[in-house]
Length: 220
Length: 220
Image (cartoon, rainbow over all chains, first blue to last red):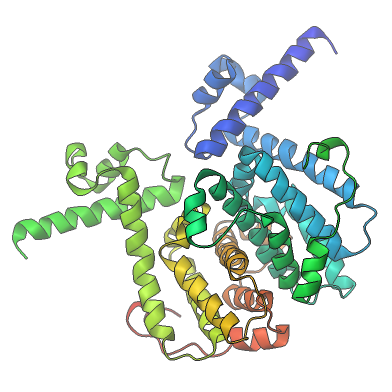
């Protein structure tokens, strides 16, 4: 890679990082391009050398943040045979990722509001896993698309609850939600939603996670 | 009521309506107070005669929009004995309300992202209904708080899907989601999530709605 190319890549990465931070804080619409370039320390005019529009930047950001994670999840769950365990593992690791990196979680909530997440990133993988569980009879919910909506949003609810717990734990405590083992409780509720008996859902949601390397190494 | 008082009320209502429209379009943070007063045709300075801050206005808006609807739902479901039917009726009518009035639905999605909806508006009512179903044994999900998160967000997923269907039906069609009977399919999936056998969930979710008057008269 030439020096010029390397510089271009670095600038693009800086723009994506700045946008990720600002979008997570205030939403895509509230952030002018000028603020992204200022935060990234890039001249306003050169923005368009990298992205056609703010929306194009947003799309690139989502692709990078969630495609990469989804691919890593696919690799990690490749050898798990039980569709319920695949789904629970994915949900648990997604919630843990969002807890370690609330900005990542906030952007996922933002993305879900657009439902565009159904066609890219983690959405299509969730739908695939639900279909697999229905076809083997492990899940009794017969309407894959509606299960996708309910389970997908149900997991987002877990992420939103975690974010809330990190910023204002007293409110959650007042209504009786604790952040402890939230990922596992969420996964158990989602498996039950798909038709597993609750005791079995809990067993699967608390079974040992696969050995984690690479992108997951830092996960506790 | 004096003429002066009536005028004050009207101005307050205009500010709420303008804010509701702008917040639904772009989120609370993206909308400056000046834009709310301009849209409402009210002097910028007099905003503070009505609300302490933009957040105070937002809170008043949420109270008005969802408390009122929640109270109407309470009245309508008062005589229904089966907790599953109470929950399904509330979900179906909430989704229908959001379909008739997408601005209302968008604000509900916005509100949910803050989880503050757990302590006011429709949230506490949903939690109450889930607890009722668990205590009578109608629902087998034993973790009311996690069910609240999953079912609450699952219903929001239904609303988000409806909004998406209204603005871009081709995308949903491409992934196999149709807007038809979405409220009933969503309610059935949520009852199944709470532990009802799917056939029974479907029966309850498609049973006749109570006779609707007042706030619900315009519901088809």
